[in-house]
Length: 258
Image (cartoon, rainbow, N blue to C red; front, side, top):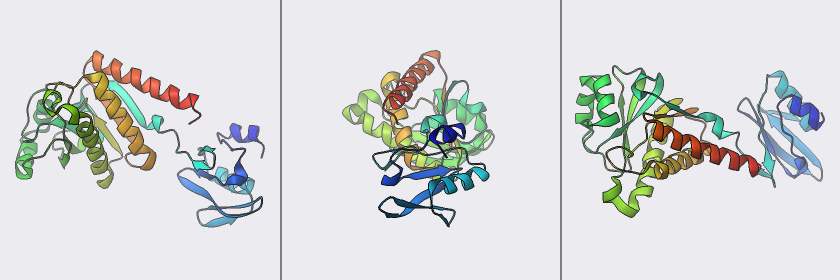
């Protein structure tokens, strides 16, 4: 199967195929498992194939539609940017598996997004949060969602920008990582984030969105769950900051051939 034919099937085939590559079709790995000179064997769902065309042809029959691209023999993940959505709106209205609350360390509610989520979820959320107790900055806790159109609420405690100082970037990144790990551990395929720490905690949104997106992209490169991450911004200012940086990151990835 030539390169043009492969493109017609939405498959990118590296010219360095004999150096060893890994393709993926519908989340099924086709992996090089044996190499002698220019002989490469492929394995798909436990079946061995003598050449890439046979493996690809079989995968296409299984309605394969995606492929990993390789460079210098390294595995490159599918386009993780497609798993990120940026939108404006009310985060309490989204039907997702997990909604992230920009909480304070008491977990007992507050202003902004925190107050909105507690109000929309009802008193059951507050009672569960009381049982959990304290949560330090940079960490997250998970609860039920009660009256929200979600299965879970993940309470993320971000840094206070003017208090945590130089430690703020690390704490904010840790906050997102903790949320994403909790989502994965609880099987949440979709998760929505507000702009954590950008309200009363004073984190400049253009700095915070870089940390949020960079951290999320790194996580998604190595994790299949969550499948979709939605950043829900309440103000036009925050939305434009996120969209601008997201566009820069995606364009840079294209220019670098990633």
